[in-house]
Image (cartoon, rainbow, N blue to C red; front, side, top):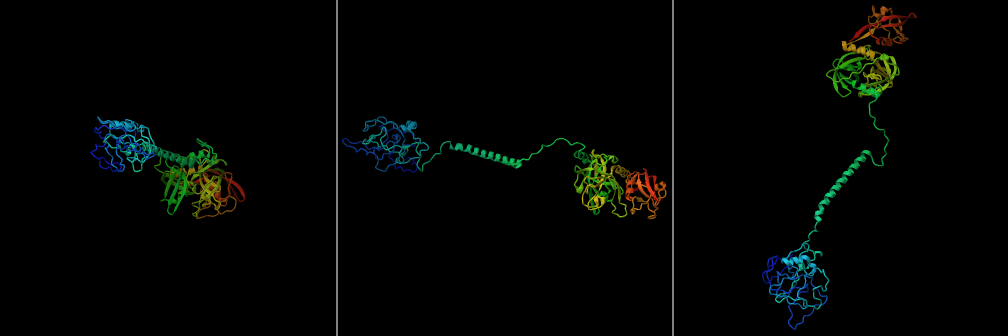
Length: 567
Protein backbone atom coordinates (compact mmCIF):
# COMPACT_ATOMS: atom_id res chain seq x y z
CA UNK A 1 0.00 0.00 0.00
CA UNK A 2 1.27 3.45 -0.83
CA UNK A 3 2.29 5.72 2.07
CA UNK A 4 -0.28 8.49 2.60
CA UNK A 5 1.00 11.98 1.89
CA UNK A 6 0.08 15.01 4.05
CA UNK A 7 -2.63 13.09 5.88
CA UNK A 8 -4.55 11.94 2.74
CA UNK A 9 -6.32 8.59 3.32
CA UNK A 10 -6.09 6.20 0.39
CA UNK A 11 -8.42 3.22 0.36
CA UNK A 12 -7.07 -0.24 -0.35
CA UNK A 13 -6.27 -0.85 -3.97
CA UNK A 14 -6.63 -4.06 -5.84
CA UNK A 15 -3.33 -5.65 -6.20
CA UNK A 16 0.03 -4.72 -4.74
CA UNK A 17 1.65 -1.48 -5.70
CA UNK A 18 5.33 -1.27 -6.53
CA UNK A 19 7.63 0.59 -4.15
CA UNK A 20 7.64 4.35 -4.36
CA UNK A 21 9.87 5.48 -7.16
CA UNK A 22 10.51 1.93 -8.54
CA UNK A 23 10.23 1.33 -12.31
CA UNK A 24 6.85 0.30 -13.45
CA UNK A 25 6.23 -3.33 -14.42
CA UNK A 26 5.21 -4.00 -18.00
CA UNK A 27 1.54 -3.43 -18.44
CA UNK A 28 -0.83 -4.03 -21.29
CA UNK A 29 -0.88 -1.28 -23.79
CA UNK A 30 -2.94 1.72 -22.86
CA UNK A 31 -4.31 4.37 -25.08
CA UNK A 32 -2.34 7.54 -25.14
CA UNK A 33 -3.94 10.06 -22.89
CA UNK A 34 -4.91 13.35 -24.47
CA UNK A 35 -4.55 16.63 -22.57
CA UNK A 36 -6.24 15.81 -19.28
CA UNK A 37 -9.91 16.42 -19.05
CA UNK A 38 -12.73 15.37 -16.78
CA UNK A 39 -12.84 11.84 -15.39
CA UNK A 40 -13.50 9.37 -18.22
CA UNK A 41 -16.26 6.77 -18.38
CA UNK A 42 -16.08 3.32 -19.95
CA UNK A 43 -16.57 3.22 -23.69
CA UNK A 44 -20.12 3.51 -24.82
CA UNK A 45 -21.92 0.45 -26.27
CA UNK A 46 -22.91 0.53 -29.86
CA UNK A 47 -25.91 2.69 -30.30
CA UNK A 48 -25.55 4.29 -26.85
CA UNK A 49 -25.25 8.01 -26.63
CA UNK A 50 -23.43 9.84 -23.87
CA UNK A 51 -24.65 13.16 -22.69
CA UNK A 52 -22.08 15.80 -23.42
CA UNK A 53 -20.52 17.77 -20.63
CA UNK A 54 -22.39 20.89 -19.86
CA UNK A 55 -20.53 23.99 -20.84
CA UNK A 56 -19.10 25.76 -17.87
CA UNK A 57 -19.26 22.72 -15.70
CA UNK A 58 -16.65 22.35 -13.03
CA UNK A 59 -13.63 20.84 -14.69
CA UNK A 60 -10.69 19.42 -12.86
CA UNK A 61 -7.26 20.92 -13.40
CA UNK A 62 -4.92 19.16 -15.78
CA UNK A 63 -3.12 16.40 -14.10
CA UNK A 64 -0.98 14.93 -16.89
CA UNK A 65 -1.02 11.45 -18.33
CA UNK A 66 -1.60 8.36 -16.34
CA UNK A 67 1.30 6.90 -14.39
CA UNK A 68 2.61 3.80 -16.06
CA UNK A 69 3.66 2.44 -12.72
CA UNK A 70 0.09 2.52 -11.49
CA UNK A 71 -2.38 1.37 -14.21
CA UNK A 72 -5.91 2.44 -13.74
CA UNK A 73 -8.48 -0.22 -12.81
CA UNK A 74 -11.08 -1.20 -15.32
CA UNK A 75 -13.80 0.47 -13.40
CA UNK A 76 -13.75 3.42 -11.01
CA UNK A 77 -15.74 2.99 -7.84
CA UNK A 78 -18.43 5.51 -7.30
CA UNK A 79 -16.77 7.19 -4.38
CA UNK A 80 -15.61 10.65 -3.54
CA UNK A 81 -12.63 11.88 -5.43
CA UNK A 82 -9.33 10.70 -3.91
CA UNK A 83 -6.01 12.15 -5.00
CA UNK A 84 -3.51 9.61 -6.20
CA UNK A 85 0.23 9.75 -6.58
CA UNK A 86 0.71 10.13 -10.29
CA UNK A 87 3.49 11.48 -12.45
CA UNK A 88 2.85 13.98 -15.17
CA UNK A 89 3.41 12.69 -18.69
CA UNK A 90 1.98 10.12 -21.01
CA UNK A 91 2.16 6.41 -20.16
CA UNK A 92 4.13 4.06 -22.28
CA UNK A 93 1.89 1.53 -24.04
CA UNK A 94 2.37 -2.03 -23.00
CA UNK A 95 3.58 -4.48 -25.61
CA UNK A 96 0.77 -5.71 -27.75
CA UNK A 97 -1.67 -3.21 -26.38
CA UNK A 98 -2.86 -0.24 -28.37
CA UNK A 99 -4.92 2.65 -27.19
CA UNK A 100 -8.43 2.90 -28.41
CA UNK A 101 -9.23 6.00 -30.35
CA UNK A 102 -11.41 8.47 -28.57
CA UNK A 103 -14.49 10.09 -29.83
CA UNK A 104 -12.47 12.85 -31.34
CA UNK A 105 -10.42 10.43 -33.33
CA UNK A 106 -7.12 11.46 -31.90
CA UNK A 107 -4.73 8.70 -31.03
CA UNK A 108 -2.80 10.42 -28.24
CA UNK A 109 -2.48 13.83 -26.66
CA UNK A 110 0.90 15.58 -26.56
CA UNK A 111 2.53 16.32 -23.26
CA UNK A 112 1.42 19.48 -21.49
CA UNK A 113 3.63 22.25 -22.78
CA UNK A 114 3.61 23.82 -19.31
CA UNK A 115 5.13 20.71 -17.84
CA UNK A 116 8.54 21.63 -19.20
CA UNK A 117 11.58 19.41 -19.45
CA UNK A 118 11.05 18.00 -15.96
CA UNK A 119 7.89 16.22 -17.12
CA UNK A 120 9.68 14.70 -20.03
CA UNK A 121 12.56 13.60 -17.82
CA UNK A 122 10.20 12.02 -15.34
CA UNK A 123 8.32 10.27 -18.09
CA UNK A 124 11.62 8.92 -19.35
CA UNK A 125 12.98 7.58 -16.05
CA UNK A 126 9.65 6.23 -14.88
CA UNK A 127 10.07 7.41 -11.25
CA UNK A 128 8.27 10.21 -9.46
CA UNK A 129 10.50 13.09 -8.39
CA UNK A 130 8.77 15.61 -6.13
CA UNK A 131 9.73 19.26 -6.56
CA UNK A 132 10.35 21.56 -3.57
CA UNK A 133 7.92 24.33 -2.96
CA UNK A 134 4.88 22.60 -4.43
CA UNK A 135 3.13 22.53 -1.07
CA UNK A 136 2.47 18.78 -1.11
CA UNK A 137 -0.64 16.91 -2.35
CA UNK A 138 -3.81 18.90 -2.41
CA UNK A 139 -7.31 18.43 -3.90
CA UNK A 140 -7.69 19.06 -7.56
CA UNK A 141 -10.24 21.78 -6.91
CA UNK A 142 -7.88 23.77 -4.64
CA UNK A 143 -6.55 26.04 -7.34
CA UNK A 144 -7.52 26.85 -10.86
CA UNK A 145 -4.45 27.95 -12.73
CA UNK A 146 -6.32 27.78 -16.00
CA UNK A 147 -9.77 29.09 -16.87
CA UNK A 148 -12.59 26.60 -17.13
CA UNK A 149 -12.62 26.19 -20.89
CA UNK A 150 -11.19 24.04 -23.61
CA UNK A 151 -7.43 23.83 -23.88
CA UNK A 152 -5.29 22.61 -26.65
CA UNK A 153 -5.62 18.87 -26.94
CA UNK A 154 -8.70 18.64 -24.73
CA UNK A 155 -12.31 17.93 -25.58
CA UNK A 156 -14.59 20.88 -25.87
CA UNK A 157 -18.19 21.10 -24.80
CA UNK A 158 -20.08 18.15 -25.98
CA UNK A 159 -16.97 16.17 -26.64
CA UNK A 160 -16.83 13.25 -24.28
CA UNK A 161 -13.06 13.24 -24.58
CA UNK A 162 -10.79 10.25 -24.84
CA UNK A 163 -11.70 7.14 -23.08
CA UNK A 164 -9.50 4.70 -21.34
CA UNK A 165 -8.58 1.43 -22.76
CA UNK A 166 -10.84 -1.47 -21.96
CA UNK A 167 -10.20 -2.87 -18.59
CA UNK A 168 -8.72 0.29 -17.23
CA UNK A 169 -10.37 2.93 -15.13
CA UNK A 170 -10.28 6.54 -16.13
CA UNK A 171 -7.22 8.47 -14.95
CA UNK A 172 -7.64 9.79 -11.45
CA UNK A 173 -6.97 13.43 -10.94
CA UNK A 174 -4.02 13.45 -8.47
CA UNK A 175 -3.27 16.66 -6.59
CA UNK A 176 0.41 16.59 -7.60
CA UNK A 177 -0.73 16.53 -11.23
CA UNK A 178 -1.62 20.18 -10.56
CA UNK A 179 2.03 21.22 -9.90
CA UNK A 180 2.57 24.80 -10.81
CA UNK A 181 5.93 26.30 -9.77
CA UNK A 182 4.52 29.82 -9.87
CA UNK A 183 1.49 29.25 -7.64
CA UNK A 184 1.53 29.87 -3.85
CA UNK A 185 1.33 26.69 -1.73
CA UNK A 186 -1.75 26.00 0.31
CA UNK A 187 -1.72 26.30 4.05
CA UNK A 188 -0.36 23.26 5.84
CA UNK A 189 2.15 22.30 3.16
CA UNK A 190 5.92 22.59 3.63
CA UNK A 191 7.30 25.88 2.34
CA UNK A 192 10.93 25.99 1.35
CA UNK A 193 12.74 29.26 2.11
CA UNK A 194 13.66 31.36 -0.90
CA UNK A 195 17.09 30.28 -2.10
CA UNK A 196 20.01 32.58 -1.27
CA UNK A 197 18.30 34.61 1.48
CA UNK A 198 20.17 33.01 4.37
CA UNK A 199 23.47 33.38 2.60
CA UNK A 200 23.05 37.16 2.41
CA UNK A 201 22.14 37.61 6.10
CA UNK A 202 25.69 37.02 7.47
CA UNK A 203 27.42 39.70 5.37
CA UNK A 204 24.59 42.14 6.11
CA UNK A 205 24.92 41.62 9.89
CA UNK A 206 28.72 41.94 9.72
CA UNK A 207 28.41 45.10 7.67
CA UNK A 208 25.93 46.59 10.14
CA UNK A 209 28.24 45.82 13.09
CA UNK A 210 31.24 47.32 11.29
CA UNK A 211 29.23 50.42 10.42
CA UNK A 212 28.12 50.81 14.06
CA UNK A 213 31.70 50.48 15.32
CA UNK A 214 32.93 52.98 12.75
CA UNK A 215 30.19 55.44 13.66
CA UNK A 216 30.97 55.04 17.38
CA UNK A 217 34.68 55.62 16.81
CA UNK A 218 34.09 58.68 14.65
CA UNK A 219 31.61 60.07 17.18
CA UNK A 220 34.01 59.51 20.07
CA UNK A 221 36.84 61.17 18.18
CA UNK A 222 34.70 64.18 17.37
CA UNK A 223 33.57 64.44 21.00
CA UNK A 224 37.15 64.31 22.30
CA UNK A 225 38.24 66.95 19.79
CA UNK A 226 35.38 69.26 20.75
CA UNK A 227 36.08 68.78 24.46
CA UNK A 228 39.76 69.62 24.05
CA UNK A 229 39.68 72.29 21.36
CA UNK A 230 36.11 73.53 21.61
CA UNK A 231 33.31 73.59 19.10
CA UNK A 232 33.30 75.16 15.68
CA UNK A 233 31.56 78.29 16.92
CA UNK A 234 33.70 78.69 20.08
CA UNK A 235 35.69 81.88 20.43
CA UNK A 236 39.42 81.44 19.89
CA UNK A 237 41.64 84.07 21.49
CA UNK A 238 44.89 85.03 19.75
CA UNK A 239 48.08 83.85 21.39
CA UNK A 240 51.75 84.21 20.57
CA UNK A 241 53.83 81.15 19.81
CA UNK A 242 56.09 79.61 22.43
CA UNK A 243 59.56 81.12 22.59
CA UNK A 244 62.58 78.88 22.41
CA UNK A 245 66.07 79.49 23.78
CA UNK A 246 67.60 80.66 27.04
CA UNK A 247 67.21 84.07 28.64
CA UNK A 248 70.00 86.59 28.75
CA UNK A 249 72.40 85.92 31.64
CA UNK A 250 71.85 89.39 33.14
CA UNK A 251 68.05 89.11 33.09
CA UNK A 252 66.20 88.12 36.25
CA UNK A 253 65.40 84.73 34.68
CA UNK A 254 69.03 84.22 33.70
CA UNK A 255 70.25 85.23 37.18
CA UNK A 256 67.77 82.90 38.87
CA UNK A 257 68.75 80.02 36.60
CA UNK A 258 72.38 80.45 37.61
CA UNK A 259 71.88 81.03 41.35
CA UNK A 260 69.02 78.69 42.31
CA UNK A 261 71.05 75.43 42.32
CA UNK A 262 73.24 76.86 45.12
CA UNK A 263 70.37 78.02 47.40
CA UNK A 264 68.96 75.78 50.16
CA UNK A 265 66.06 75.82 52.60
CA UNK A 266 66.68 75.06 56.28
CA UNK A 267 64.17 73.53 58.71
CA UNK A 268 65.30 73.84 62.33
CA UNK A 269 63.84 72.11 65.40
CA UNK A 270 65.02 72.30 68.97
CA UNK A 271 63.21 72.21 72.29
CA UNK A 272 59.91 74.02 71.95
CA UNK A 273 61.04 76.15 69.01
CA UNK A 274 61.24 75.55 65.32
CA UNK A 275 61.79 77.75 62.32
CA UNK A 276 62.46 78.00 58.61
CA UNK A 277 65.14 79.97 56.82
CA UNK A 278 67.40 80.08 53.80
CA UNK A 279 71.11 79.59 53.14
CA UNK A 280 73.53 79.16 50.25
CA UNK A 281 76.46 76.85 49.51
CA UNK A 282 79.95 78.27 50.11
CA UNK A 283 82.19 75.42 48.91
CA UNK A 284 82.30 71.79 47.79
CA UNK A 285 82.95 70.65 51.37
CA UNK A 286 79.30 71.30 52.18
CA UNK A 287 79.61 74.56 54.16
CA UNK A 288 76.44 76.66 54.07
CA UNK A 289 76.14 80.28 55.24
CA UNK A 290 72.95 81.55 56.90
CA UNK A 291 71.74 83.84 59.72
CA UNK A 292 72.38 83.07 63.36
CA UNK A 293 68.73 83.64 64.27
CA UNK A 294 67.75 80.92 61.77
CA UNK A 295 69.74 78.14 63.47
CA UNK A 296 69.49 79.49 67.02
CA UNK A 297 66.42 77.32 67.93
CA UNK A 298 68.54 74.21 67.37
CA UNK A 299 70.93 75.24 70.19
CA UNK A 300 73.45 72.55 70.93
CA UNK A 301 71.22 69.49 70.59
CA UNK A 302 68.66 70.47 67.96
CA UNK A 303 68.09 69.17 64.47
CA UNK A 304 68.72 70.95 61.17
CA UNK A 305 67.44 69.61 57.83
CA UNK A 306 68.68 71.08 54.58
CA UNK A 307 66.64 70.87 51.37
CA UNK A 308 68.33 71.66 48.07
CA UNK A 309 66.62 73.32 45.12
CA UNK A 310 66.34 69.97 43.33
CA UNK A 311 64.45 68.43 46.26
CA UNK A 312 67.29 66.44 47.88
CA UNK A 313 67.48 66.63 51.67
CA UNK A 314 70.34 66.14 54.11
CA UNK A 315 71.06 66.59 57.80
CA UNK A 316 73.36 69.43 58.84
CA UNK A 317 75.39 70.35 61.88
CA UNK A 318 76.41 73.77 63.19
CA UNK A 319 80.05 74.62 62.53
CA UNK A 320 79.99 78.03 64.24
CA UNK A 321 77.73 81.00 64.80
CA UNK A 322 77.97 84.60 66.05
CA UNK A 323 75.10 86.66 67.40
CA UNK A 324 76.91 90.02 67.05
CA UNK A 325 77.08 89.64 63.30
CA UNK A 326 73.94 87.46 63.06
CA UNK A 327 75.82 84.89 60.97
CA UNK A 328 76.21 81.10 61.22
CA UNK A 329 77.81 78.31 59.21
CA UNK A 330 76.38 74.77 59.00
CA UNK A 331 77.74 71.79 57.10
CA UNK A 332 76.23 68.84 55.26
CA UNK A 333 78.20 65.66 54.54
CA UNK A 334 77.95 62.97 51.90
CA UNK A 335 76.23 65.23 49.35
CA UNK A 336 77.60 65.22 45.81
CA UNK A 337 77.09 67.75 43.05
CA UNK A 338 77.12 70.87 45.24
CA UNK A 339 76.92 74.19 43.39
CA UNK A 340 78.69 76.91 45.40
CA UNK A 341 77.72 80.50 44.61
CA UNK A 342 80.28 83.06 43.56
CA UNK A 343 80.95 85.83 46.11
CA UNK A 344 81.00 89.40 44.88
CA UNK A 345 82.40 92.64 46.41
CA UNK A 346 79.93 94.74 48.36
CA UNK A 347 82.24 97.77 48.30
CA UNK A 348 81.72 97.96 44.52
CA UNK A 349 77.93 98.15 44.78
CA UNK A 350 76.28 101.41 43.78
CA UNK A 351 72.88 102.70 44.73
CA UNK A 352 70.45 101.81 41.98
CA UNK A 353 72.18 98.60 40.91
CA UNK A 354 69.70 95.78 40.11
CA UNK A 355 69.61 92.92 42.59
CA UNK A 356 67.73 89.63 43.00
CA UNK A 357 66.73 88.10 46.34
CA UNK A 358 66.23 84.32 46.60
CA UNK A 359 64.74 82.49 49.57
CA UNK A 360 61.85 80.56 51.11
CA UNK A 361 59.38 83.12 52.46
CA UNK A 362 56.80 81.36 54.61
CA UNK A 363 58.47 78.07 53.60
CA UNK A 364 57.88 78.69 49.89
CA UNK A 365 61.21 77.42 48.60
CA UNK A 366 63.03 78.82 45.57
CA UNK A 367 61.14 82.13 45.60
CA UNK A 368 62.76 84.79 43.44
CA UNK A 369 62.16 88.54 43.78
CA UNK A 370 63.99 91.47 42.26
CA UNK A 371 64.70 95.12 43.04
CA UNK A 372 67.55 97.57 43.36
CA UNK A 373 70.03 98.76 45.95
CA UNK A 374 68.14 101.52 47.72
CA UNK A 375 70.96 102.63 50.05
CA UNK A 376 74.36 101.64 51.45
CA UNK A 377 75.88 101.67 54.96
CA UNK A 378 72.45 101.70 56.57
CA UNK A 379 73.14 101.11 60.30
CA UNK A 380 70.62 98.68 61.77
CA UNK A 381 70.42 96.60 64.90
CA UNK A 382 68.53 93.37 65.28
CA UNK A 383 67.76 90.97 68.07
CA UNK A 384 67.95 92.08 71.68
CA UNK A 385 65.40 89.58 72.97
CA UNK A 386 67.63 88.59 75.89
CA UNK A 387 67.62 92.10 77.35
CA UNK A 388 71.33 92.22 78.17
CA UNK A 389 72.35 93.18 74.62
CA UNK A 390 74.33 90.00 74.09
CA UNK A 391 72.11 88.92 71.22
CA UNK A 392 71.97 92.29 69.51
CA UNK A 393 73.48 92.35 66.06
CA UNK A 394 74.87 95.51 64.52
CA UNK A 395 74.87 95.65 60.76
CA UNK A 396 76.13 98.31 58.37
CA UNK A 397 73.56 97.03 55.89
CA UNK A 398 72.71 97.27 52.23
CA UNK A 399 69.12 98.45 51.81
CA UNK A 400 67.00 97.01 49.00
CA UNK A 401 63.42 97.22 47.83
CA UNK A 402 63.45 93.62 46.61
CA UNK A 403 60.62 91.92 48.53
CA UNK A 404 61.97 90.06 51.59
CA UNK A 405 59.66 88.25 53.98
CA UNK A 406 59.95 85.93 56.98
CA UNK A 407 61.74 82.85 55.70
CA UNK A 408 64.05 84.82 53.39
CA UNK A 409 66.57 85.25 56.23
CA UNK A 410 70.01 83.87 55.37
CA UNK A 411 69.31 83.84 51.63
CA UNK A 412 71.60 85.48 49.07
CA UNK A 413 71.18 88.94 47.56
CA UNK A 414 72.89 88.72 44.16
CA UNK A 415 73.88 91.24 41.52
CA UNK A 416 73.29 91.16 37.77
CA UNK A 417 76.05 88.58 37.35
CA UNK A 418 74.56 86.22 39.96
CA UNK A 419 77.35 87.04 42.44
CA UNK A 420 76.45 87.25 46.13
CA UNK A 421 76.77 90.81 47.48
CA UNK A 422 74.75 90.42 50.69
CA UNK A 423 72.87 88.11 53.07
CA UNK A 424 69.21 88.99 53.53
CA UNK A 425 68.73 89.47 57.27
CA UNK A 426 66.07 91.98 58.29
CA UNK A 427 63.03 93.94 57.15
CA UNK A 428 61.08 96.80 58.54
CA UNK A 429 57.40 95.93 58.67
CA UNK A 430 54.60 98.45 58.75
CA UNK A 431 53.32 97.27 62.14
CA UNK A 432 56.62 96.81 63.96
CA UNK A 433 60.07 98.17 64.49
CA UNK A 434 63.22 96.85 62.92
CA UNK A 435 64.53 93.40 63.64
CA UNK A 436 65.24 90.07 62.01
CA UNK A 437 62.30 89.23 59.83
CA UNK A 438 60.72 92.45 61.08
CA UNK A 439 59.69 91.03 64.45
CA UNK A 440 56.15 90.68 63.08
CA UNK A 441 54.24 89.11 60.23
CA UNK A 442 53.33 92.26 58.37
CA UNK A 443 55.35 91.29 55.32
CA UNK A 444 57.55 93.35 53.07
CA UNK A 445 56.91 97.02 52.48
CA UNK A 446 59.99 97.47 50.33
CA UNK A 447 62.44 97.98 53.21
CA UNK A 448 64.83 95.04 53.29
CA UNK A 449 68.35 94.87 54.68
CA UNK A 450 71.29 92.63 53.87
CA UNK A 451 74.66 92.08 55.56
CA UNK A 452 77.42 93.14 53.12
CA UNK A 453 79.25 90.11 51.75
CA UNK A 454 82.68 91.61 52.56
CA UNK A 455 81.83 91.50 56.27
CA UNK A 456 80.10 88.13 56.01
CA UNK A 457 83.01 86.56 54.16
CA UNK A 458 85.48 87.42 56.97
CA UNK A 459 83.14 86.13 59.66
CA UNK A 460 82.37 82.93 57.73
CA UNK A 461 86.04 82.16 57.26
CA UNK A 462 86.66 82.57 60.98
CA UNK A 463 83.68 80.37 61.87
CA UNK A 464 84.85 77.63 59.51
CA UNK A 465 88.47 77.78 60.62
CA UNK A 466 88.15 78.39 64.37
CA UNK A 467 84.48 77.97 65.18
CA UNK A 468 84.22 81.57 66.47
CA UNK A 469 84.36 85.10 65.09
CA UNK A 470 86.45 88.12 66.22
CA UNK A 471 85.02 91.62 66.69
CA UNK A 472 86.96 94.87 66.21
CA UNK A 473 86.89 97.12 69.31
CA UNK A 474 88.17 100.58 70.38
CA UNK A 475 88.33 99.76 74.13
CA UNK A 476 85.74 102.24 75.49
CA UNK A 477 82.28 102.00 77.10
CA UNK A 478 79.52 104.05 75.44
CA UNK A 479 76.54 105.75 77.08
CA UNK A 480 73.74 104.21 75.01
CA UNK A 481 71.09 106.47 76.62
CA UNK A 482 72.72 109.66 75.32
CA UNK A 483 70.06 111.68 73.43
CA UNK A 484 72.42 114.17 71.74
CA UNK A 485 74.01 113.93 68.33
CA UNK A 486 76.92 111.49 68.30
CA UNK A 487 78.23 108.69 70.56
CA UNK A 488 79.36 109.76 74.05
CA UNK A 489 81.92 107.86 76.12
CA UNK A 490 80.56 107.02 79.58
CA UNK A 491 81.81 109.20 82.43
CA UNK A 492 81.69 106.53 85.16
CA UNK A 493 82.50 102.90 85.48
CA UNK A 494 79.93 100.14 84.85
CA UNK A 495 80.09 96.71 86.37
CA UNK A 496 83.57 97.47 87.72
CA UNK A 497 84.93 98.43 84.32
CA UNK A 498 86.67 101.68 83.52
CA UNK A 499 85.02 103.89 80.80
CA UNK A 500 88.29 103.79 78.86
CA UNK A 501 90.12 100.46 78.99
CA UNK A 502 93.66 101.12 80.20
CA UNK A 503 96.15 100.11 77.52
CA UNK A 504 93.43 99.63 74.98
CA UNK A 505 93.17 101.13 71.49
CA UNK A 506 91.14 104.15 72.75
CA UNK A 507 93.51 104.93 75.62
CA UNK A 508 96.44 104.75 73.23
CA UNK A 509 94.69 107.21 70.85
CA UNK A 510 93.99 109.73 73.73
CA UNK A 511 90.24 109.24 74.09
CA UNK A 512 88.90 110.27 77.52
CA UNK A 513 85.68 109.76 79.47
CA UNK A 514 82.92 112.18 78.36
CA UNK A 515 84.24 112.66 74.83
CA UNK A 516 81.56 112.70 72.08
CA UNK A 517 82.55 110.93 68.84
CA UNK A 518 80.79 112.55 65.86
CA UNK A 519 82.56 111.06 62.80
CA UNK A 520 84.36 107.90 61.70
CA UNK A 521 86.63 108.40 58.70
CA UNK A 522 84.64 111.55 57.95
CA UNK A 523 81.22 109.80 58.05
CA UNK A 524 78.77 111.33 60.57
CA UNK A 525 77.77 109.28 63.60
CA UNK A 526 74.48 110.13 65.35
CA UNK A 527 74.27 107.47 68.08
CA UNK A 528 76.16 104.80 69.94
CA UNK A 529 74.60 102.06 67.77
CA UNK A 530 75.84 103.77 64.64
CA UNK A 531 79.39 103.99 66.05
CA UNK A 532 79.37 100.22 66.80
CA UNK A 533 78.04 99.48 63.31
CA UNK A 534 80.79 101.57 61.73
CA UNK A 535 83.52 99.94 63.75
CA UNK A 536 82.26 96.37 63.11
CA UNK A 537 82.28 96.96 59.42
CA UNK A 538 86.07 96.83 59.65
CA UNK A 539 88.57 94.15 60.55
CA UNK A 540 90.63 94.09 63.72
CA UNK A 541 93.90 95.93 63.09
CA UNK A 542 92.38 98.46 60.68
CA UNK A 543 93.28 102.12 61.36
CA UNK A 544 90.46 104.65 61.75
CA UNK A 545 90.28 108.43 62.10
CA UNK A 546 87.78 109.53 64.75
CA UNK A 547 86.39 113.04 65.03
CA UNK A 548 85.36 114.01 68.61
CA UNK A 549 84.31 116.96 70.70
CA UNK A 550 85.77 117.69 74.08
CA UNK A 551 84.82 120.80 76.08
CA UNK A 552 83.12 122.34 73.03
CA UNK A 553 86.14 121.82 70.83
CA UNK A 554 86.43 119.37 67.92
CA UNK A 555 89.54 117.28 67.44
CA UNK A 556 90.58 114.12 65.55
CA UNK A 557 92.46 111.06 66.73
CA UNK A 558 93.88 107.98 64.98
CA UNK A 559 93.59 104.52 66.44
CA UNK A 560 94.20 100.93 65.44
CA UNK A 561 91.28 98.60 66.07
CA UNK A 562 91.70 95.91 68.65
CA UNK A 563 90.08 92.45 68.66
CA UNK A 564 87.76 90.50 70.87
CA UNK A 565 86.33 87.08 70.29
CA UNK A 566 82.97 85.56 71.18
CA UNK A 567 82.04 81.94 71.39
